[in-house]
Image (cartoon, rainbow, N blue to C red; front, side, top):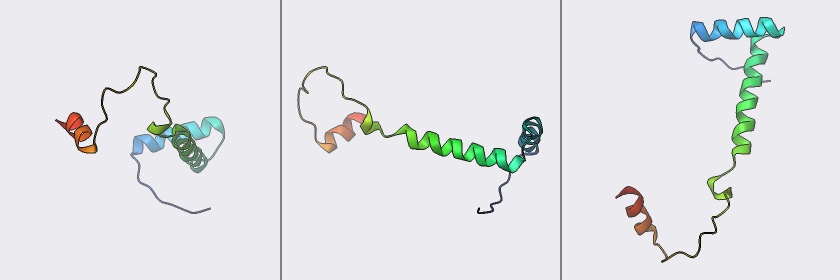
Length: 74
């Protein structure tokens, strides 16, 4: 395993210590589990391009990239 250092507030560390004690685990294990959980969520989140299209009919016109940017930002 790779050792890392991080800075957390005393309050956050205290909460982790209390949780670790209640669960009978070291604080480092809880932090590893939290990091793994975060990565699993990110991996399973997918992409906006994975969202199915809506069957509301055909587009009224084809948009150029410039027109789309103008519509979004204008």
